[in-house]
Amino acid sequence: MDAHGLILTQPARGYRYSLDPFLLAGFSRPRARERILDLGAGVGLLGLLLARRVPTARVVAIELQASLARHAAANAAANGLAARCHVIRADLREAPRFLPPEHFDRVVANPPFRRAGSGAVPPDPGRAAARMETSFAIADLARVSAALLRFGGALDVIHLAERLPELIVGLAAADIEPKVLRFVAPLPDAPPRLCLLTAVKGGRPGLRVLPQLAVHDRPGHQSAELLALVDQGCGGGR
Image (cartoon, rainbow, N blue to C red; front, side, top):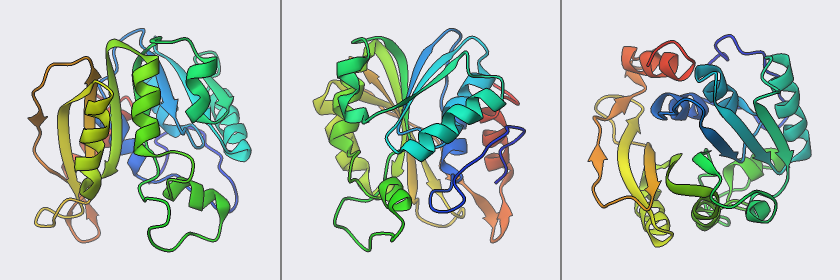
């Protein structure tokens, strides 16, 4: 997956961005002049996609790893978005201490998918942090989002489908109500692997489930629906 016209750098070894930010950007519905918080920004791709798509949106991107934060800041500058995409190198778990409370209209997150201690840990520290919940768990996502979202603000997140119950319970406990759900499967007849979820702080109960998205319509061939979603996330449509 290329960066669809964005100028991007990333570390020579370790962390690599994947399809996930493109999926989440296409699923998200940012509005004009929104204040968006990107938790665990990596090299900044998700925030850059949203900022390019909505020219009046402003993004604050938090990334713990210093090398990734440097790449994220450089990528914002290289794409002419530094004025609207501010990168902070920090532990997102501490964000409520240095960001104003209930300030953001939207939080977006592509967090690590695997529980700490479950399965083999990648030998590269950057990849390990991106995959394992060593510094960013569902409980952290819920707590920080609840503290920094305005009432009625939205959280957009991508996660493993198998962890959806845990995600819903964690968010609901923080008064962030799941509102829109879409499963993502590798093929039309395959079980879903991922889920895309929008939840609203202080929202009323009621979940809308969208049709499942198949990444490929046949092995090795990306589906037209995926390409349309990615195009939308990259600013090609609404």
